[in-house]
Structure formats: C-alpha cells, structure tokens
Length: 261
Ligand code: 6PG
Image 1 (cartoon, rainbow, N blue to C red):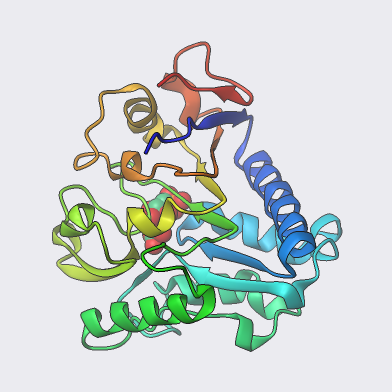
Image 2 (spheres, rainbow, N blue to C red):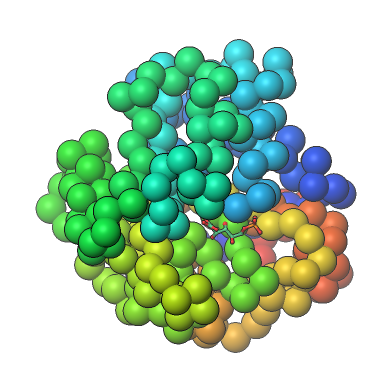
C-alpha cells in the first residue's frame, strides 16, 4: 500500500507548538464527534505533550471547545511502572489534563504496565482496543488522532532503534525490550499507530534537529530511525515542529509544506 506523504508545519517556539497542537486536537475532535459521536485519541508521553495537555485543560479557547464526555483516551505507549509513578505517561496526562476536564473515568483506558508480566499487559491492552474498536477481521484500530513524539535517537512511542517491536507485523500492542533502559516498555506497533485518521508528531528542541532531518529527508532506515516506520495508510500525517528542531531541514521545508517522497 502506498503511504500518504506527510506535511510539515514549523512554528517559532515551544509555546506555539503546544498551541498549534491544541488547535489540531480540538479540530479533529470536533469533526470526529460530529461524524461518529465520539473522539478516540492515543496520547504520548514526554515533555512536549505535557504543555499541550495543560493548555487543553486550562485555556478557555480549548477547554470549552469539545464535548469532553465524548472523548475516549488511550495511550500509544507506557513505561513499566505503577500508574502513580513519576515516570508514568498515564500519571502525566492525568495531572496535566484528565483530572481537570469532565472526561468520564470509563472513557480513559490506560495501559496497565505495572503488571509484572509485560507481555500479559500488552495482550490485555490489545484486547481493550479490540473491544473498543470492534474492527473488521484483520483491520488495525482506527484512532481519530494519534499523538506522537520523537526522541533524539529517532524513537517514537516506545519503538526504539533496533528493538524487536519494529519487526512486528500483526500485533497491535507489544512488550518491547529496550536495551538502553534495561527494561520493557509497552508500545503500540507501527501497524496500529499508522492506521489512524490523523497522526500528529510533536517535535521541539535543537537536540532533535539532525535526527528530524534524517527521518524526513534521509534514506529509509526504520530500524535505526523508528519514527520512519510510522506511515499513514489512509489518514493525514503531520509533523508539527518548532524552529529549533527544524533548523537542519532543507530551506524549502516550512508551513504545511508537503514533503517529497
Ligand atoms: C515516552 C514517549 C516517547 C516520547 C519521546 C519524545 O513515553 O517517553 O511516548 O516516545 O514521545 O521520547 O519525548 P519528548 O517530547 O519529551 O522529547
């Protein structure tokens, strides 16, 4: 299947990044609720989305813009810690956003990554997704929006360079051994993430500039640069990046520029 070409949008500052992302979140959410009566979003961890979540919960332009009881929240990945741990992606989203918005608890489906058996936690989350999305046979979940970040090493969600999850072609959720942390992470696979209607990468900071250039303009090498493994199969894929992260991109990259193949 031919992948849809991504778009890149460059904004000046990290604050502008959060604001632009919040506008996308609300626009996609409103459209999904109008069309389907619900908005299914997969959140990411990391520091960049924290500013987005805070803005969604506290800024009057955003926190009254969605029917929050129609919003269904999932995660693209989780660290193998209890939900109240400082490293928990769920905890970050709960504190920054979920506790401050009228989203019913039953609409929030976290990855139970505190399970001592990470494979069991991954299987259980896949079942959770199957129960929610009730896909046709062999179809991956169809999120309305998947939020992703990217590390300086090119990882996204918990798909790390040279990790086994990158070879997975059937499962939606997998326990992925991450050698550099000497730990498992639970992550959705590229199969599951790439099937969304909208995929939004948020990338800020000069430390990611070289990697961003390689991911977007370099040769395909998804095992070294897992962010390249996220291909939009039928939806929109947008890279929202700040000026510092964009500093090594070719001059033609800019606001909503469609990238070359
Ligand atoms: C996580 C993530 C991860 C994150 C990137 C970028 O659990 O850590 O989901 O993939 O998105 O590491 O994180 P920053 O935005 O903090 O750089």
